[in-house]
Length: 442
Image (cartoon, rainbow, N blue to C red; front, side, top):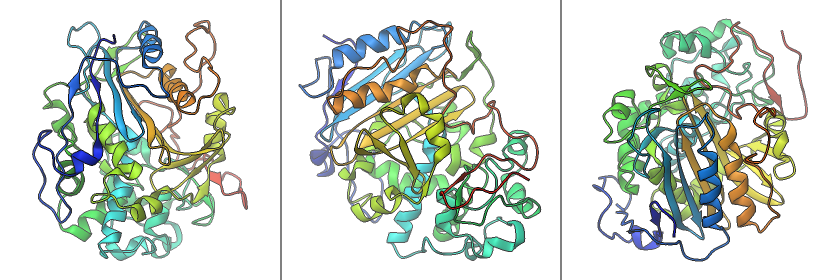
């Protein structure tokens, strides 16, 4: 018998309006209320061995770098496993539960891209619109804001070097001012030909959403996504995080310590400002598997989940897992990977004191989401251990539970976070080409 919260969800029944799970939103799509029955019982039989997974996670939480963690697993379109481990704050006694709110960090990018294609489906804009058409604050080298498209922003194919102006964002500068100053920078490739991960520039997508709708970005997300899906803990501000009934404090250092959370990445909400519980992140994964078509239609999901650019840098970051994910690409706000011959969709995230991940197979409607409140990289193996079970692959100790503690560990897959290394100068060589061109660093 597993200890913790175990959930079985019939999403089709939810979408037909069963009661429970929070207030319904008022918008143009059918309102769906999610009734998530709670039972302290073993999940129904499936490919994933939940007793083994639980035991592995119990061992992981004994690592001194861990504080709290929450996981959700979906099989065959149903949430089969939701559980919290550890505590919300080092030295405290409040346990992490499936309702505990964490920062989603760069999983926010998938939310933003989904929101943009939702507006595209409404006929409000086009992905091929130049970013300048929407009177955003973006100014790019050589005036390329008149040719760089909305899709280029969402795919990180604007031509600028990676993480442009992130250091100055972390120093407290207004992202609108920083986007306007990007005209003084230098491109590392022609727009559309290389992938270079962005935060400040990516957040121009929130400006587009606000221009199109005439409403604040967070309000649009609540009305179009969070309320209709019954995501009752999801939000997009520091104040909302800290007002949550239960929220995980971020921790830094090998002997984890708390700190005061910065506003920096909340100022770029499309890039890294979303908060929510593991229950809500599981619901969000279900929607992106195509199980909430009145909120995210198959055509919308095809737009964001279709590869746009190769990402060799991600291949290098995942080299420890190359036996499984040897090839990665980027769509719009989402990574697209080959997992041992299967097409999977995912993303990692990290801001100071928090990490996040999502990985799922939309064809099998199975996947995993994980949130934790420390800088540890050890949980990066969770998604591989779960997906190996989904695909009936041989066991590998991806969590390195039986690896000596002094063995090297991989760096974070999303190195954009507050407090992580970022280029301090105005130009960086961190970019990824589509294979046609790889210009040198300036």
